[in-house]
Image (cartoon, rainbow, N blue to C red; front, side):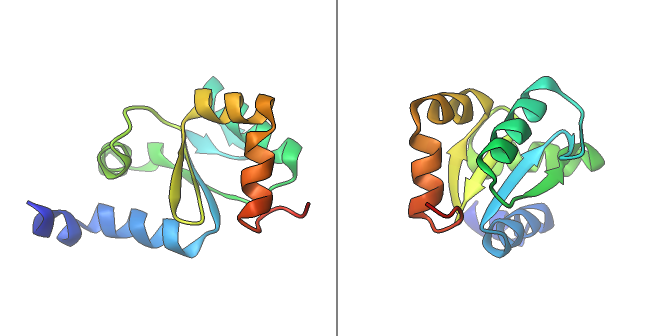
Length: 114
């Protein structure tokens, strides 16, 4: 089973994207034009913090949309990754932002200046 997973081009694309970009948001739409409220909220929070991030539109491909859910074992989109680690979806991003945890995480990972 795990061999098939690594041979999956969608999983390879996701793994490479997560490895290549310090902060990446798999979302519906693009940061300039989010296609759902949860993606829009996530983008607003990252923009508010001043985090440099890459948005990947999962609506461009159904295999990508399903693949990211399997990759993270998380059922919803958007999904935020920081330095290769899955952080969470919109609710978690929002909670972490409100508690100050998200800013701290970004600073600790070196993707946001303290």
